[in-house]
Length: 386
Image (cartoon, rainbow, N blue to C red):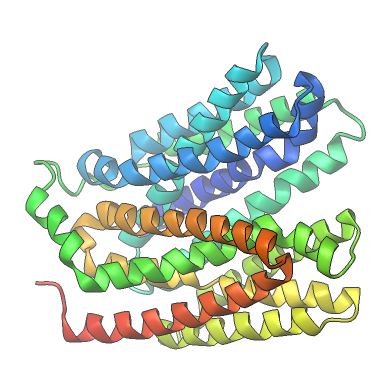
């Protein structure tokens, strides 16, 4: 049990690092624009390379951890992120920066998938509750980097703050090196027949498509909030950006609460209530007449979005205990595709009919998540994996 606690903490430290890595671009974007005199197209290329890298990392982490274990992957990926942070300071040309953010994306995808699978593997019961607690550390990482950077850059240069962050990120690496990890689950090689059978498992596909819309809803909320609030509610950029902070805080607080609630309630019931909360928050956002109500709406939206990944991945981990890494890869790749495709849809809709329609798209996504999750849960009971 003590060993499992040490390993679970390793997963939490890795997720904290992932949260920092994912907010790195947004946090130091101003520094990069000034240093390399970037136009919007060049700066936008970084925003495209990061999710592409995450998709690639998510595709391959499962086979790596199931075959070779978690320790080496977490150590190498974390060191690469530290090296990339240092390269950001000393890079002499913009193509190097593009390569750096592509690598940060790949390593971030590897770490995100590996830490989720690791947390599920060492949780004999209450997998969804522990995965929810794991998500708290993502929120802490995501909040801490922009907060600390905003404070420290008043007194120190961006280069000094980035270097300090890189040095700090060596602490999880040291922890990964000194603690024991579980052995690889497939030391004799990956059973390809079982892997290919995943493509025919309707239950896994249904759970994955819940995450397709879950990831899309999170991505739309993150990417389009400032534009939506500026154009529809007339908010200044700083107030719109604080709405994003409220979203992250709501998600982090909810995951902390869920780590307890999911030990008492059935995960599917919690997820159903979360979908209802998403719809309520979006309706409130549509009718909000004050800044306080807008911020409350985004806090509630964050709370509603908090349960999707922990609960669905918990079910996937229970169904594929011996191939949890590959099963998580399958689910996370579909989730990331949903994020990409529905964000493109929002771009088309906002240009054609107006950005105010994003709340309608998000409500539709919440309804589809509810229906698919209910169907998947019932099928999971009727058709257990043989």
